[in-house]
Amino acid sequence: MRRAILNLVLIILAFAVQNSVFPLIPFLAATPNLLLILTFSFAFMGGQREGMLYGLLAGILLDLFYSGPFGFYTLFYVCAGYLNGICTEYYYEDYITLPLFLCVANELAYNFYIYVFRFLIRGRIRFLYYFRELMVPEIIFTVVATLFLYRLLLFLNRKLKAFESGRDTTLV
Image (cartoon, rainbow, N blue to C red; front, side):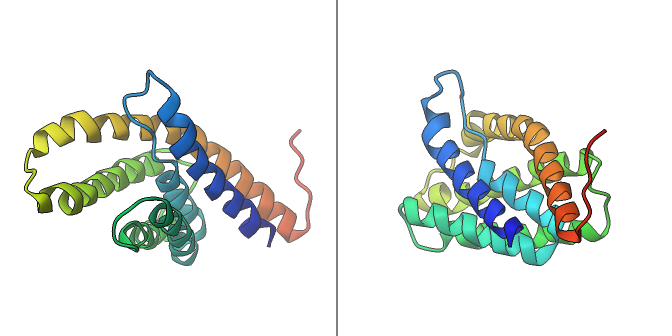
């Protein structure tokens, strides 16, 4: 129960920071996608069900606050949570290389999804411009944010597991 409440608070906080604080920072060319980081991190650490659940929450938040067809972001985030949850069975969560690879792959998929359904359908076919000016800066900032956030999320996940199992693990 504590895990669900903490993760819900993290998703709401990430949404607020991503959409209210980062756009106000003048030197950022793009904002890191914190909700995507949380979704693939929870999926990678918890499995497909957790990934889909937190993807659903993140997608609904985005759908509620942005215009367009309801379910547009939810569909992507649920699918991303499911696909990233598959990796939990095959890889060890301490290594940072797989989360960074997942971050780049998820960002590419997310931005391509946005490009196809928001721009290409309306006849805007300048993909190289979109890739160079929007996708690359967002991917770079999201990867840098993943370097910091993934370790924090992994630490919180381990503390919650230790607390739930009833044993106290203090750092010495």
